[in-house]
Length: 94
Figure 1 (cartoon, rainbow, N blue to C red):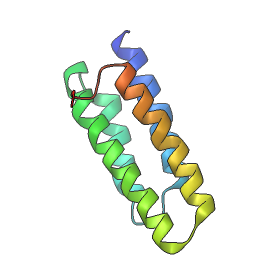
Figure 2: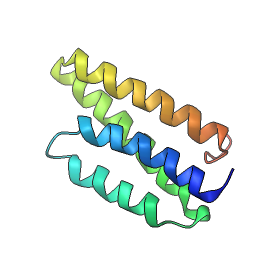
Figure 3: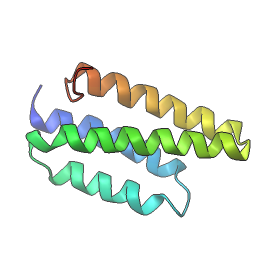
Figure 4: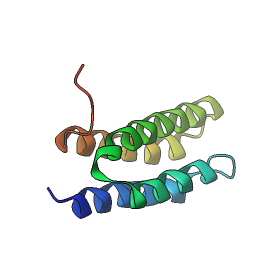
């Protein structure tokens, strides 16, 4: 996979997440998106891990509020991001 492809795929998923983020987490999603788009290939694994952690946190926040609709949408993004990052070997083994 080319670096541009990896960046593009991660950017799409972060843009999807950004559309669902609340005002408290939107700045962090925007920072991650900017970082992905400016990062060299070697930094994408760390950014991916942070994106996964943030998305997981958003899922838990939605569940704690009882917002099943938000949880469902966020969980779908989390699953796609996780599968993509694993397939692109951006996640550390273990």
